[in-house]
Image 1 (cartoon, helix red, strand yellow):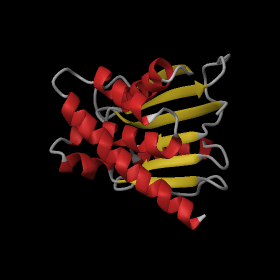
Image 2 (cartoon, helix red, strand yellow):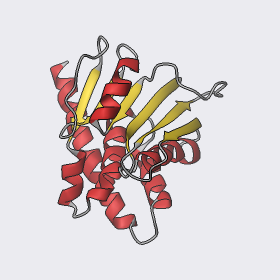
Image 3 (cartoon, helix red, strand yellow):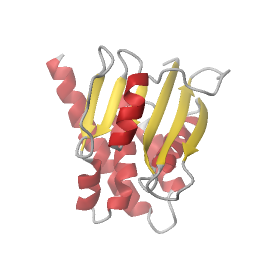
Image 4 (cartoon, helix red, strand yellow):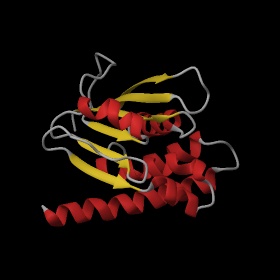
Length: 187
């Protein structure tokens, strides 16, 4: 695997920071990889721009900041406009397809869209869209094993919400597996 640079971005209230922490915990604690995480957010509790930068590596990480992400996960139009130009050519873009209109992308970008908000609403709580996205990211990127991601979800969410959050993860993971399989058939 080597090293992967990942940015997850959206706005406050979407669970961007928790999504990054769950992916990082899955890779570091449960899969034994090296991980760094830095976060950025506005002063407002909800609605302001926020992002998480992760580096996941099978080797020691010497510098914790991203240059050009290999994987970009965007959950708002503002995040897409701001961060898509930074995506590495040939990188992977994962986006909330009901909230984002994509513009020009770097050459060779692999795109995966998901209606994470709608899938979360089907479970009765729009708030779990971040765990839908974590499941989707796990399926299409392989940053962490599914077992590690499930453990990280259960360990990271508020007590009493584990079942709902794991259901959200599974919904995103299943959708991600179907998208990845469809892309392999086209290629």
